[in-house]
Length: 326
Ligand code: PBG
Image (cartoon, rainbow, N blue to C red; front, side, top):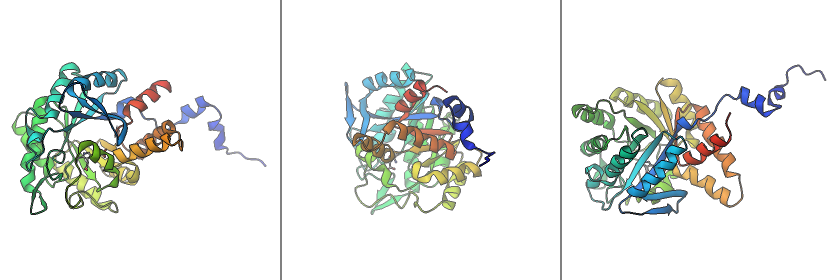
């Protein structure tokens, strides 16, 4: 048979494959989420997130050194408070755990980009992302607290604030609050399109942030919706978001692609805790090659259209990229 067109010709050697490779994850695409707790000398593995830890601020700094040495340029900080209450007081207290961590990290590594997750759910005793009254999560009443949380992070030195609460109007409120207080240079990365997802399970056990009643479906999105994702993103842009985000990533690759096509702005995707832990556990059982799965998954998220990826795999991926220069 006389075959003229043979796609396999370009797959014959590794160099050829590299030459024609369309999508490559770079270390600079990666954002590494880290969990910080009160205390000293703490580095405690999180059972739900194998290979991830709760760090006290002193040991967080040692971990951040490794992250920086690997060439990772950005981290995202989550705090576990000492006490939770109805109004999420530690979320916006200047001596809250995240505020302390931001100050310490920026002092030691001023060039590292420090992003902070802005939400109330880890800090409220009911585990919801806003103020609750009669079992309803109140929208407008929560905005002040959310904006104050973002401001406290900016004052501590956060380079980017990332609201993940999904209250309506929070981006506008945060933008206004930051600008009024001379933080107009701090960008907002909005968790614009955040679905009500089972894949947050391990994170909630790591952060102690499971809702104590009901679920998050009255503020996070329904998995079946994509037009609504475009509307959410458009609103956030109008309100002043600088970077959009889709979360989770793997079950929502089509949403990433559609958002990227609709809006010419930087787009982040959050490869969330459940997506990470599934790979880790399957690897532990000897069922898949975890490293290959990691590379394939992160590549697919970038190929779908994400400009940056928040992932617990950031260190592993950075190591892999260093071992496999292309
Ligand atoms: C806080 C928040 C959550 C995640 C990031 N910020 C949990 C949630 O909405 O329940 C999830 C991250 C992950 O699963 O890795 N609102």
